[in-house]
Length: 333
Image (cartoon, rainbow, N blue to C red):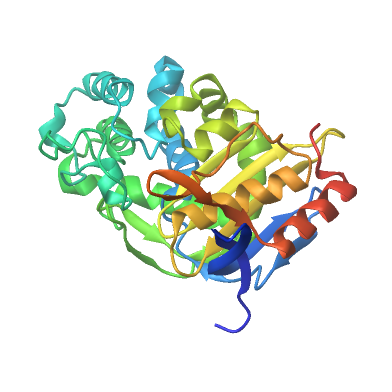
């Protein structure tokens, strides 16, 4: 796709020089507080946000629960919009949410799996058989079960796009993303929508600032490690006061409150689906814009013989866009 631009470069040292070994191309959309869209490539590219919309899905479930949602503690809500690593803290939080829903792990509507293996990374505990609980979306499906109980449904009906729960979820997604461009099936079995990248950025700003998303936002800030886990960009950004969520196949989103009170939203997609590229493009842009600092998060280095011999870096266009956004008021620092 010719309108894609280089977002990330992977380098390796050759005789003391940093040489580009590979490049990742994609698209960026940034929505400013005044609604203006900035970007690289095609900011309106239609994409599958995948797990990047989990804060929206969780909010739809809270709205189904109504007054009962107040009983849901922040740790269980945080893991409900997680793409977790299967760490013990994640599994424990999902178990608590399952107990609240009155079901056990066997009733989860996600498939068995390892969360890291599902993203192309080594599983946290490769000697443990894959289970539904360990699947990275198990928290979301536990919240589906809790919301489904309020609607009198369970099992496959929880993820049926024509069922009462997913109809409410899809209605919220349609509203907040500015329209849907079709619905497929996600890796976890839930509906997977298509939307414009700019709509996804706009929704990310809403998650960061609108009252409708105050509960999921507060839960993520209170328990950033439950949303992703050790080393994850979204957890690091949440810990720094930026609402963030990773999605599969190279899509990342972020939303933040700038120093002047304006709310910004960002969506990045990498066309080859590389998570490391989407993470670095997101991190590099936020750093250049003054939204985060150099110690917020760093991509693992390129290694040779177990030693650092290169890096994954944001491309010049990404850094330049971030600098322009910082000048336009996007900075938090």
